[in-house]
Length: 382
Ligand code: MG
Image (cartoon, rainbow, N blue to C red):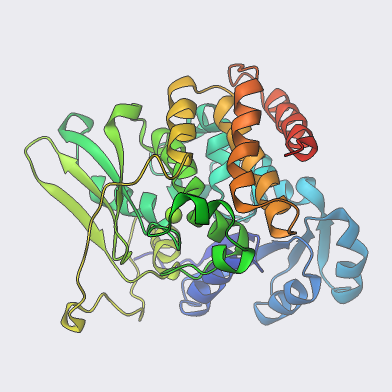
């Protein structure tokens, strides 16, 4: 085991996955050092984390919060916006970037880190959904590591396997809080009902995505890019207990699964420790607890997200990004009470139906299309 500590930059340090990253590093301070952190608007939390971990650099991802950050941390290097996050991502001292910011904000920092040869632990699935074709071209084998639990599981199951030995990648899904609900009732579900996830404790946006199954739609695209497989090799299985985090079916009939409690610290610890596995005191799945594991086919009629995912997978280019941007905006509109739950699907459908698909040619174009799509999704009247 190497003696040198790994220098980690955490983008989105005060968010849900960022907090898991903080816990992992706290549990292994002999292995890691935090050399930079960003937060979007919770500057007090960010400043407190910087002091606790003696972190020399901080970024206010929302430029409007920079003044506040500088006031809270007069003795540290403070930066702002996507430029600030990008500077941290590829700073000379950075060994690993943990990218856990929402939306498209992670794209430029991830690209910069990959180009600079940094290891990247990616939790921001939007980055791959938006620009997976461009991002994967820059990533050397083992350089870009998933933090999403399903993809972490698949990555672990694939280790030592040749592509020709792999028949299917099976992403598991808890099914979310509306798995047993009638379609009509789902369409008018409240914010509180959508935020009531049965197994995972996560941020608000991803929790709503789990209820609509848009999370799985995004994850299918993410898997396609990360593992370089064709859409026919991807499937979703509903597994309400969230103990098996995904499986790989091999051509000889074997099914390899990764099993753990639903706790984001585990996939984060795996990605930060890679290619080794450092020891942590996180609890293992306890088979003695007598838990039953169930598996079901997803209901693709009830959840239109599967239809959107199939179209986005098949078409590629800028369509997956448009799907994701429309979903981002629609979820925000749902969370403020402006539209009903079913309105999320209506907005995505309208945006995808009218989107002019272009190839993923340049980052500038992808980001420009992302901005346009968001405005369009905001203006759709239901
Ligand atoms: Mg996931």
